[in-house]
Length: 119
Image 1 (cartoon, one colour):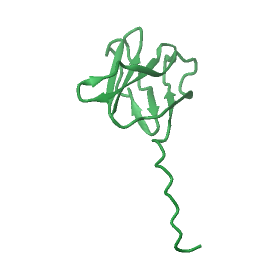
Image 2 (cartoon, one colour):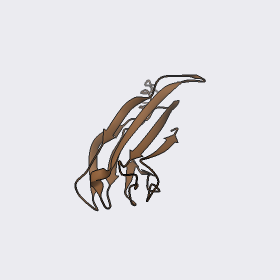
Image 3 (cartoon, rainbow, N blue to C red):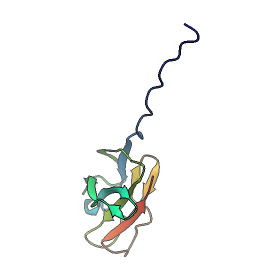
Image 4 (cartoon, helix red, strand yellow):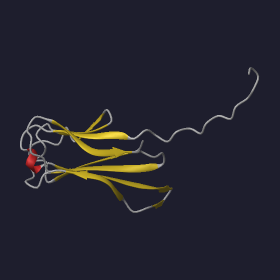
């Protein structure tokens, strides 16, 4: 009844974010990885692969990758988008939750485009 104090449930971990790929042209050359490294100060773990994907078949489409990324506080993340021909993703991009990655990876930017972020 009133006046009873119930223990608070623990805070939930950060919600897993769905990773999707939005393709434009030549999705058969789009590949990507997401790596995580955790630790304090200078003592970081090695980067661990969390998700990867590609290449793709459908032009101008949004692809569910099946990756659900659970970001952790205190960890650093590296998103690497690659195109083995070095042309970039031509306006295609990777979406982690509502955040876009690699949409600026366009013509003649080399075989790899890397973005680091901290949640």
